Length: 385
Image 1 (tube, helix red, strand yellow):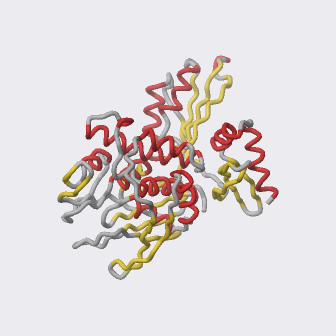
Image 2: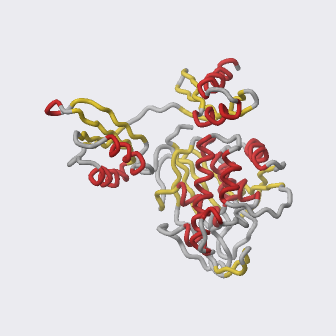
Image 3: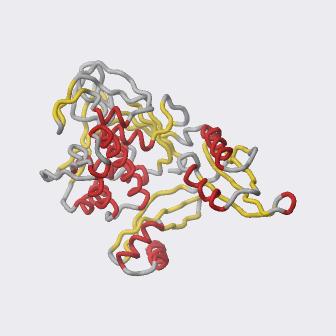
């Protein structure tokens, strides 16, 4: 599976964390391996499997968890610490924390508290922690580069929550989905959960239909039965990027400071695939910064606005970019008892291994050894096998 694979969610009747994970399992995620990683993270044994369910004559996958009973109400600080000390890769940790942060920000805004002081109830329970961590893990394992979606269906009526009876959509869901196109429903129940909403908000930049070569499809379901629609979430794996192509935006500036150039990396985060700045010599023999921003075609206008606002440039060049990319999958190496994520890259008869640097840094701190030695050991483990 290449890094330019897109997952499209076709939301028939809402979206939740367990249904999102169910889609990834239908596309090939090893749920048992994921459960081992989460068990190690939370310190209790969690078993997970997929069972089949008939939904309007369609066989759908349903996530089944065996969890210990608990009464813990965790804060964002608790969950961040839990994820940071886990055996997941650096990217999975960042993505899972990012999803939780969206929920914390929404809950904080709704209840008038700092996001760090919010006590998660439903979302802080083990099943929601499992769903968010495993979804982020599955995206990495399956090599999914982008996620698109149809408009989420929200539901209506009332629902009982930790704070009492709440209208549907729940206040946190409304806050999370600000700026997102949504679809109505007459079903008197919650159809999009806070976890499902946060997954969409974190990953999805494009809502609507889909096009492209379909590689694989998956169907998942939850535990509810609806009156007017089948309880079904469909996932479609599409070859290629959803945005319709990549472009390189390029400009040269000779009267900006290094501080200004460094500031651009933060401003362009989320708009670009890659940013490089090269120092060279330009017109009138002046030292210049040559700035290259690789981005989706749909983001070119937003990139141009940042460059015009944050630098002295008066224009930029842009051109389409084609790429040859290696297929990628994630494996783990054991370095003195600590797991380190390793990208396995393949192209025809060529294969190479690239340990995740953030994992090497984290493992180095635990083992009291240089990150470079962890990197070498993780790489060597694959060449010896």
